[in-house]
Amino acid sequence: MFEPPAWEDRYAGEESVWSGNPNPQLVAAAEGLAPGTALDVGCGEGGDVVWLARQGWRVTGADFSANGLTRARRHAEQAGVAERCDWWQVDARGFDADGRTWDLVTTHYLHPPDAGMPAVVGRLAAAVAPRGRLLVVGHAPSELFTHHTASHRRAMFWAEDLVPALPEGFEVVAAEQRARTLVRDGEPVEVEDATFLIQRV
Image 1 (cartoon, rainbow, N blue to C red):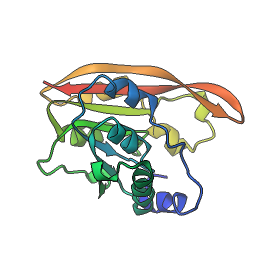
Image 2: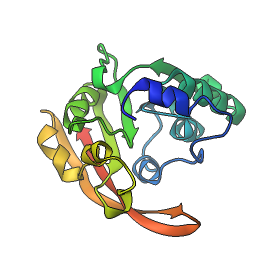
Image 3: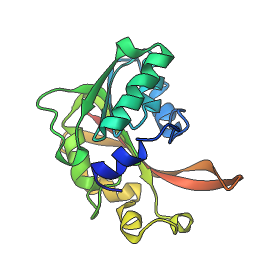
């Protein structure tokens, strides 16, 4: 689950993998912001990209899966926001903005193995424009995820785990767990999103 071939296979079928709805922590973080430029790393099928574009943002959707980006591009076209979207195939673990910056950089449920998320935070922070924000959301450790492999569970993190990765020139806006309700086997289940939001000062 940590390498591109697994996600190419997962996105190779006809059925949608995700709901297509925006992630709630993104909505909470971005609703009050003036639209600008945004980068969504690990965009998958493009639900967050489409939502941001509908709010007036110019969005770059990035993912290491070509099949995922094909789905995201099609989603944006069907939503009528393709002209506000760009696409970039890149692995977040080797991400290099190469001097480019965005007003909002976001990633949801990206879980590099071997506690690799702090290093990814440093890479993504380099892509944040002055006064811009970086939003990182992940699965907080929980007994509800016992069906995942041990390596997958080890890749989960608490928001506080990312605070030591705070780059110079940033301040913490939020580092906390936020409740989210999902449906499993037809029943609502409450989980916690590790939510780390920082701003370049």
